[in-house]
Image (cartoon, rainbow, N blue to C red; front, side, top):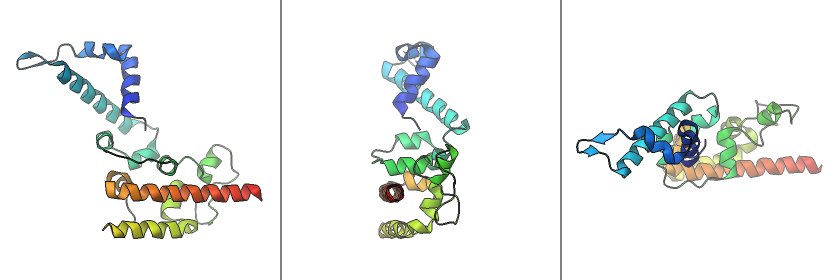
Length: 189
């Protein structure tokens, strides 16, 4: 999912030719006293594009894995702090060191997991794979220490809940590092 500034910049270039001319489509905006203040116009333009971005996100056929984690653009924009890492990116996009993705891009001969219990996708590694049972138990224990006893934690809650988000980030990083280690070990042999 692209960030807000990139989205606004791209949309205003497409719709208005240049971001500085975006206000021309909103010149007739008025409040009770007449013309709106520049800051009010800017806020309305911003709200317009956030709404448009949400509509595009809701109806796109792209980024559906990420959409399961971040369906609401406004909620995402309101996160004050997000310590993102490579592991999180790979998990929420289902792109990276997974056989399902490698198979899709023809870099692997199989999409099956080494545990032989399913297709090796991000979801499989996070919620099911026996190879990552220890990391998953650590994740569950860390959640329980924060008073979160629901398992499995929904994809939305993994990122929406700030208490879960940091623990999930650590868990994703552990999965990614261990998966990379397994790939390197296999390559060296």
